[in-house]
Structures are given as structure tokens and as C-alpha cells.
Image (cartoon, rainbow, N blue to C red):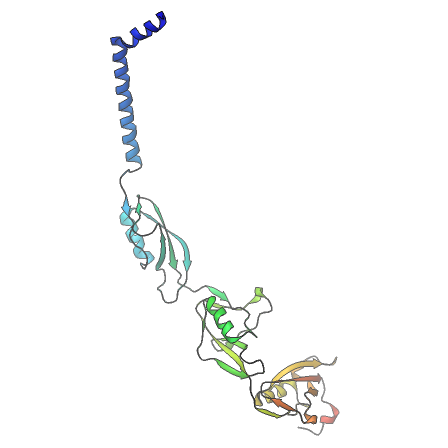
Length: 272
């Protein structure tokens, strides 16, 4: 009890109360300066309304950032042919956001050069499916579709870029590439009811037969060389299927398979 009385007398004494008030005053003063410093350091209550940079060129946006002490960074680039190069497409934070000075503003811009796009393997695919697949890759399809006689009606036979036929890829790794947004022309198969007696192609070279086949709107099928052939184009045809000697009927667009040898067959001496 005596100890508690001494504590009570001490905390109620004038000396203790005076020291306690001085300590509270010093603590309040320290807290005042700490919060004042923090407010100034973090610019509490000071913010900038971020302008809408979309549709603005990168150069103009950088000028705006200089006036607001904001830092502009290119995060990504896309390509839209209908938009100007280096136009800002998206921004982060979005427009009208409250940001502080020296904040980094990330933007996506429209590329000045279209990136290369791989042309998918649409050879032999349905025309409408091929068109959807190309458009999904950011490519356009010429409205003027070209047609060739072929039994596989409505399938893609060739893909042309600037008038030149692209090579069909053997794998995904070697797909032909064209600039994004490019226009491609499809050559599509169209079946034909026009028929004819099988023409004779034996005794011709493969090159000569190929020209003759195009004249009849027929396709050169499989070339089967014998062991003497080193150059198929100049090799001579000694057998064909279907065989012209049987009087068979063939439709435009169908194929003719040929067997070839290096030298002109003996029965062809009196021809040509």
C-alpha cells in the first residue's frame, strides 16, 4: 500500500505533470514535422489528370508528357493498315486517371511497317474455309477469284501474291510469309462437264505434254521415270493413263499420269 501511495503522489505532483506536458508537446511537434515531410515527399493531394492519348501521334504525345512531367513508354506495337504509323492505340493508365508527376505511362502504338504473317496451308481446302482462315491471320482475299478446271470442286488449287503463285509449304516451319494486310488471290477448282476423247501424249517430252495438257485444260498427274531419266522435263513419254488408244472419255480438269524414259521410243521415230 505504501508503494502505491508513493506512485500516486508522484504522478499527481507538479513536477511529473510538467514533464508529461512537455513530453506530449515534443511528441506532437515531432509528429507534425514527420507528416509535413511525408506530405511533401509523396505530393499528397497533388495529382495530374491523364489526357486521352489514343489517336494521337507518338511525337505529339511526348510533347504533352513534357508539359505534365509524365514519362511515356512504348509497351507494344500492333499494325492496322487503316491507321497512321505511330498513332497511339491504347494507354495504361486509361484517360482521365489521376496520376502523380513522373508516373510512367505505357502505350501501344500502330507500327509503321506491317509485320510478316505466315500464310497457312490452305491448298486443297474448301474455298470459304480458306478465306476465313486468311482473314483470321490479318490477310485479305481478292474478290476476283480465279478458277481452274479440276474435279475437286471449290477447293483451293493455288494462292497468289502480287500475281505470283506461292509455294505450298511442306511444314509449318517453312510457310510462305507476306506482310500483314496483304491481298491474296485464290485459284479455285471448278468441276467441268465438258468431256473429250483422251488425247495422245506419248512420244512427247514432258514439257511438250505439259503445254498440250494446258491447251485441253487437263492436269499433269504423276510422272513415273525409269532408271535412265536424269531430267524429267526433257524425258519422253512412252505410256499414259488413261490410254488414248482405248478411246476413253476424260473431263476437263482431270489428270493424266505418264511414264517417261530418257530417249525417244522406237515407235515414235516417224512422229514429229
